[in-house]
Length: 623
Image 1 (cartoon, rainbow, N blue to C red):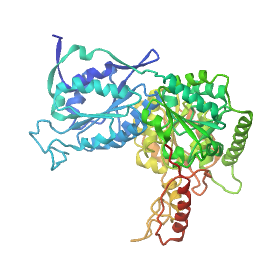
Image 2 (image 1 turned 90 degrees about the horizontal axis):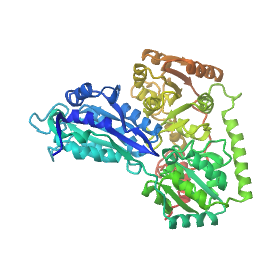
Image 3 (image 1 turned 135 degrees about the vertical axis):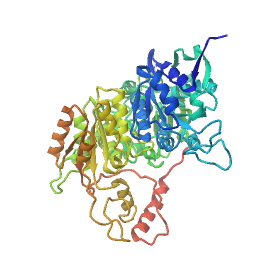
Image 4 (image 1 turned 180 degrees about the vertical axis):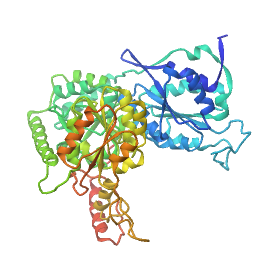
């Protein structure tokens, strides 16, 4: 019989987690790098006390200020580490647990690992109903933690301490698997956390989960090569999978060998640097004129490490060639098959290397190369005009702020963004100078991610200058992790674009024929009047000062440049408040499916509805 040791369930969990490692290409990484938490009655006397007794340097504890935010930080850390490590997040049994559900959705939508350890109601049911317990009429085995089921890739409730022996290995397997990863939730009943069990000593030995680099079959490779050789205007769409497989260098080599142009998704930005002759920049709804023009004519589209969201495909209207074919390269089989693609299921870097060798001696035509060069040059001129100071319009535009942050970021910084109007504009305008200078959470586009996410990126690489780039609406939702950054001595540069409201949705509302309603931060014009009074002024620099950061304000381009320089030279966290013009946007070149009422009496909505009816005729469904 194997030797055993008596431990509480919580203590066993704390001893198990530091022994989990993930290995790729011969290098080992800690799978669980620490624990974020806010203790409550559901976990303080179980998991919390176990962390105090057995955690320490092996499993460090970080105190968050909001449960949703701590999951964002863990997710951002995992993204910055190419999914080779994450954090655990723990909370109390009630609202602390449900606050993490949004973060769980962010993780699973973006396919990034995070371990969630919410407290739960008593398994023995003796004191039920306990404080914060949901009484469900159909079962006594349901708690608010069941809400995690649809947003978790693995979910379990530890009703007996010995259940850890089977639950934890499976949870770790899911976290480490690039094709299955996402949020993993282990609900921990309050009483069970404190219960003792004799655990086998070998359960706490070091375990290593290896990330393989699978290749595709010779038959599939041969079929893909035939499609390449038959294509006249191929286009490659690079997604986040290029980063997760550490394949930017392989992609650059493939593009140089074949001449095939490359467009990038939000998650794929930086997969190929903008200075590369094959780089067309962003594609889709938020894409560049260069990428979208060639996408319309492409007869072969190679989907590399992308899940093909509606923003990437312009709601399935971006690829209009009547005989367009697709090749899907992805570690996730479902993604590889999308759009009726010829699926090459495997590691992106491995498959790029296979294709580069198999296509040796073949490249696109000189005519197509010349067209790529022309659209790149034209877009470069257009971009320069969009970010240039406007003599006819005082005040800063969002485009100008993006360009200034892009310059300040350089090759040693990372800009983190997620929601509102910034992702659309920055995707179009940002010129990647390093593979990891652009960090976008646009799978779930979660407001409030930016500052917490920047904290996670900083934890992943403390040497990098990390910029949290967000709007005033997102800042007001979840800015409290500024305190966590100050507490941990982790410097962030936070740039807040202030347009007095939810400007992105305001523009969408007006662009769809509606009037300004419910999106601007304005005072109410007397009961029962609408929110159409003066703008509500918020001093974000002063707010930052109250939270322990340095606050700056920049209203001109020269002031912004100076503020960014000051922030880079500072030792602590700096918040730069930047009022911007809400009436100056960027032109779009692709469509997004936003249904408009066909029966509205508003003239603008009726006109938008007619335009919508024409646009949906451009949608294609490939199989």
